[in-house]
Length: 250
Image (tube, rainbow, N blue to C red; front, side, top):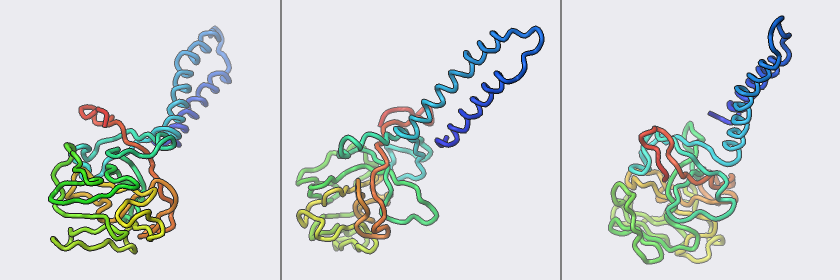
């Protein structure tokens, strides 16, 4: 349910409550009983509805999983709770599952993406032989469906991958991918400030940073299809609440 829908429901309940007070009392009807019914049955709905509206408007939102890019962690049709408030107090952590606007234009859709944070600002990163290395150390990843079939390295102020030509590392095109200009990097082989390398847990079926560059937690996208448009992280996905047999924390 969208925030406006919930607010509309609260407004309807308020209207019903007001109507009960305005409708003339019939002969023999106890006015105290009518007031008691209103307080006992309608007021709790109003309070709960307003609390829920505040919650989903400012703190938590829901997110529906439309693809297999995060299998096995998240399945198609899962519905998640996303904390929209958390990243106002700290930066995203490595391995957080994050909802965010991607730096690419999805045909017919303005939906956010959901991926896992793998590389954070200042990290060196490479993928070799199916293993992700962060700052020279292999990343232990029990959550992935299978290792990536491609190699990758961040160097020379760009992301290089051999996905399209095995064995030959090629840089991403800044006209299509969010690769900041050199002036925004602190070193040619380290992820720039405010930039994050995002990956799906279903590594070989995921439209992620190895294709469209970095996500950003603030500012405007530096390059790519959405250059100049607002970037940021929508929130941290922390709980699967539907379907019931999938209910658990992430």
